[in-house]
Image (spheres, one colour):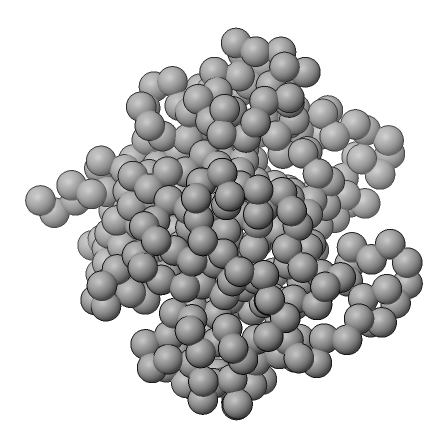
Length: 358
């Protein structure tokens, strides 16, 4: 269980994110998250443990013996996938991760199909889910909701872990985990994830995947970050303030081609027009210089990679899809493995998996 019983909600809410980490760790398993709510919970050691566990699960799942062992780990547990914001990849990869480990799952994918439609509070909905399930994986358009619900459950008679699968415009920690895992795998035979330049391009103002990944990259040595976007969608100042505080080198730019030439990884994002304050707001922004196509592909270094959290629109041309440097489909599959690792670690099965066959 997490230590959230030791602090009032109002006090916890005011803490800087990094200061919240100790309250979210598992009392019974040192250096392991109980709730996973934001990227600031993960340091380099924990990231490397998760990557190693994901690699092990990936390897084991290739054999019948290994797959059956994985399925035998958590058949006594149930996970609720509570997705009140549209999703396909995030939902399905969490579902597949649960299935790999043998968990039974239930889901609500539209608040209109739950008792919230009748006026039930979110707090009561979450307490209801905790009556039937042992973990809640939640995705919401509401800022801070996963964090508040984690505190509520930790202070209830049936505390269970919450995994944040996307919360408002602020955090998407499990996406950032799969992004880091993709970067680690992409460069593991090419010198590792150090001394690299990572370029983010697109809607950086409202892209929560960029916010979470930018922070996780600060755990690695000499990672320079370049932010390429129209002025109206450029990276917010609070992200840059974190980089400044950590002494991370970065550049803010509007020249994608210049950035591509010097990049080890280019992380493209779509325009997040679901957050528009007025109809057609995003469509009025000129984004034609912020798309990755055949010309940009020619400029990308031979060992560079292209990433995208998906779904995409036209920000990456389909002519790039078959280039070996295009990682976004493998990146998507990596989500299943790293989320399996996170769930297994949360329930305390890291050691059993790592020792399988030893």
